[in-house]
Amino acid sequence: EKEQAYKAAMKASHGLGGVLLENANIDDIGGTLHMRGGVPVPIMVEEGNPQEDTEQQLHGVLYNPAVFYNRHLPLNNNNNDKDDKERKQQLLKTIAPFQWYTSILKQTLNSDPILHCYGLHEWAMQYHPEGADPPPSAKYQSSLNLRVSRQVINDTVERKGVRCTHVDALRFFAPAAGPLNHHGASLQRMDQLRLEQKGCVHAHMDLLKIGLKLQGFIDSELMVDILEVALAARKLDVEASPYDATEYGAGIVPIETNEGRKVYRERQIGLMQRAEPVRQRLLDAYEVFMKIAFDESLLLGSDEFVGGRGKRTPSVVDDNVVMSKSNTGDGPYVAPERLAMAEPGGLPWRKNLIDKS
Image 1 (cartoon, one colour):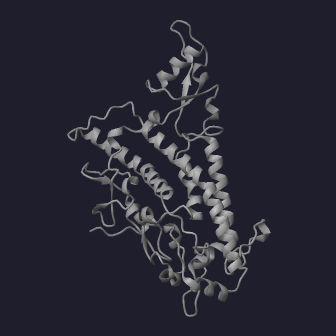
Image 2 (cartoon, rainbow, N blue to C red):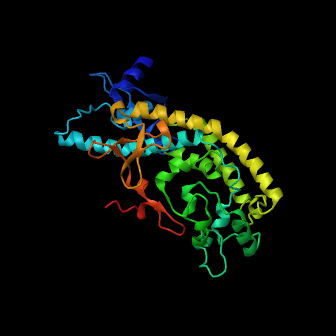
Image 3 (cartoon, one colour):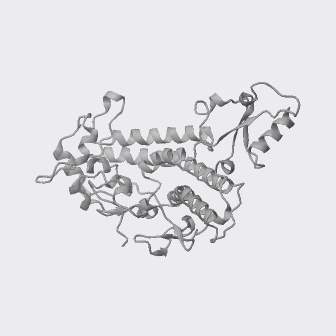
């Protein structure tokens, strides 16, 4: 029976093999099992000895990213072959986000932590000095009461400014808070490769987004650890904010005071130490996944990336950046949203692309 299951699995996977979840059935896919990448392995029927309902009888469900991304189909690397060229370009677009997240994980692991930001990004979203327009992001937390006055928020933000390295947070700043950010009032998505650092609570939350990108091909125990880190990071994020979330079981870290900033820093360090091995395991999972899923010839360009307006520039993180070749095959491929700008109160990344004309 084991030999039959092996033969059936190799046939269903075009000879690539994979992880076979024995006794799993069609109904499990999309329920207990992730839909992406699940390959049913039917019980093969010997010629002349038919079985009824064989289409529903499985040895199990097999997972292998190489099967999902059709690695068994050869790439001829022939630019004169239109179909081959189009398939290669589609693969490069598919690979790009995985390489991007690999670069982000490497950069974060190799970074020096910034431990004096005190979670002020949430305060910058509520910053409203006299004469300024109301902060647009206030609507997102309209269901939560502020635990401090507007004046305390303004004074806390203005005390030493904001040192926020997380490019995704800047778009939600009140416009008046932009100039107070030491890392810039406008940032490009590519700046994330320069700024992302291991002390950032939002970088820990992003581990969940990055991990989910591998679903179907990631260890469930790792996903549990990622989720627990992300929840702990979000809890600190909320407790250090100007909102009152005590009715939801959250505490208060009063970063507007010296004592509160001390508590935040201590918890930030503890969270960073907890997240570090989880981030490394996720990076390992990404690297294994890409080696299995994609042809090595596509995984090129590890020593440079495309900067702001499409010009080739030296990598600011040395060999931590990995990009695919471009649409023409002459340089790295970068998704359009990588060349986008974030500004306080600005548009989402995909709607705020940099004009490269």
